[in-house]
Length: 91
Image (cartoon, rainbow, N blue to C red; front, side):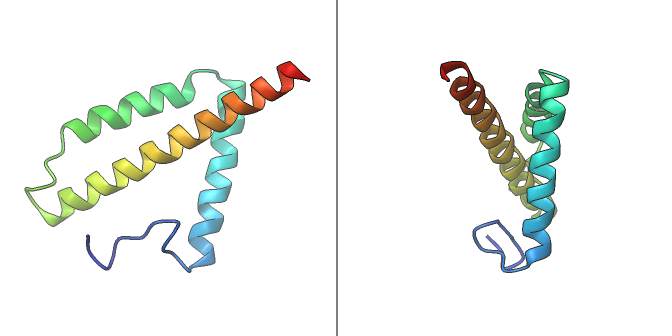
């Protein structure tokens, strides 16, 4: 992993955190309006990721890391939406 790799846990730049926060909220809102959107995005990223060979170049390795992080974010959003809908249905 290069020093250029940035994750939410390692970044001290509040702009990156703000972008992730806003994107997270927007995608959750879109998923509520258009159910299945997160699943479609996940499938697309998985297809793109399967076509990448991270050993072929540093750019491909960086792209693979971006795809992994995007998948992690989508999985987190989906889990949070499921939890929120479960909480609402039990109240």
